Length: 477
Image 1 (cartoon, one colour):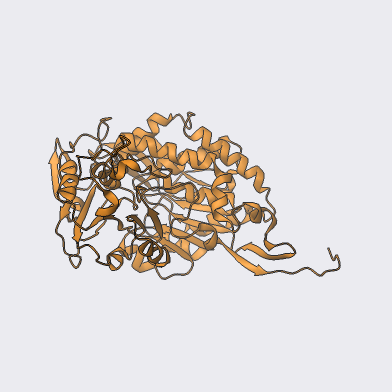
Image 2: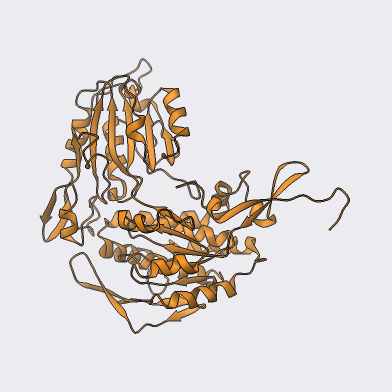
């Protein structure tokens, strides 16, 4: 049985309190040390002592990149990448193929840490992290300084790639205290082992497995905290300026029929032999297939088992495209409900059957496992609480709008929005809408991302601030 320890002060620590982590069939999977809330103060003090203001960031970047290459290829702590994916699947119910792909996504982001930082700094270069200055024009500069030293990170268990966030904070010179998600302590532990193996100073990281009682302690003792959670945690932390809170995404896709073209499943050839509609477009830097609108929309909902906060929770169809939404619903309904360890599985299993039954979806039991049946539920009124509701499964609501209707009121409050439209004015309005965090135009799924790209704003804008800075004309330093 695997064991996940506490990590602080650059080494493993034991705990008198150990939690037994079970898999999605209820079988014992791992023993996880539990850090008491009273330990947070000491762990953060150790991190502060390890936080060197003049740390060699370029050396840290090299080691993070090396750790990324190890993460997806090496045996770490006696665990291969394949075994790690199996453990994550058993612990979370996520399909095995998705767990393996997620590890590769995280590893790629770490290996490309320099490129990721270009998204984070003003001017599109990591230079401000090295110099502490921003130069908007020759002879003009301002300071670029961290607002603290210690970041708390309250991790979820829905997707391993979220751990790139705290790795980027390390790359920016911060030290980090991570509270792993309850179901997936394996991923942050593997990341830590990869960093240590690559020569990264591991005393700059604390791994503190534990319960909800650790969250207020992290917020109190750390300078900034990034947290993921649901409405209950949002009500506790959502208005705290020290916290960057990531709640349900409620991401959406808008499809204009004049942008789609051909009816689903029956693309009309163009004179050059290419079919019309989505087949004539290429998704920008996207792995999804854009060969027909049904395939595209299913992938927006189904990708990574629907567990990402950027998977589509609602599809809006503006105009007349008979059968399009019905075809998507039928494709989702036909998905087999398989054991997540089956390489063909696409739908996650739920460890907590009671939680599955509380969702707006249909909870079903197959071979002793609980699933929320994949669905696109049509005709849900926007005032209905089910509209756009996010659950960690390939489940979404579909809504038809008349041609010419303004969809923006229904798109507000979305983490990510994909606009399949030719209406430039709508694109501009959505780009300026403060409640939409990510916007994609054309056949780019809402879950599309690039390492370091803004998620809920830029992480660096939360961790750094600009300062007035001016040097005398006469050389002074």
